[in-house]
Length: 289
Image (tube, rainbow, N blue to C red):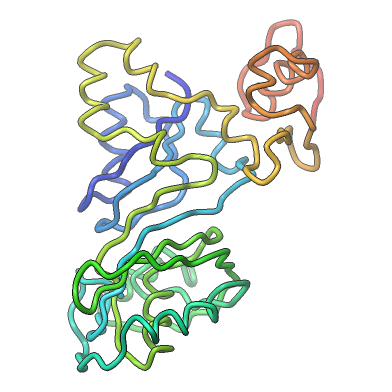
């Protein structure tokens, strides 16, 4: 079974929990996912299955969109409400201060990753040190916030936001920094990823839907998988097809390829090499990279 399965990750599952479950459902260990989600987070988790797993690192579009809720009044060790509370403070700011602070966080910037993260320092994931009560010096990394939209206040002291950002952005850290800019303590109370690269909530399937398809048979399960070429296009340049290092073709987008346009034969030729799959017998020996 080969293709891209967009999972709507349930709350309290790690991204690895999803992979472990899908190995049994899909009958393969050749799985890879694009963009780890925290256990408390829900939403879009692209899982690359079979030979498509080799396309995880070939995606042109790694940008993400999130819906998050900032809760003012406290700070935790994890940066979200699942952690231990380190400090509390009365809330003295509100919507006006939030709206005034938001523009400062749009654009390219440097961000220090949180201790509770999978970022490795000297080969050790930071979260392992954090669980031992240690604090490790971390280097700030470049990120970009393309836009932040205020979505209202679902409860007193809570503020919902939609954030469009680059790969590697930690929304927990962004919200803590936003609260600090308002002169407040803050932590993240909810997080949902609504887009990962080209893939959106509309593409995603719940674990219940996936398990039901498994019961219905292989054809029903395969029908949930998207074709791997979807990962080889950039959202900002929908007609650009990635065909290996330094080689991108203007082909008119995945729909044009599916329709058998002028680039179709070359696409059919190159795709096995891009993904490291077995090419057609007549193409063996042709070097494309």
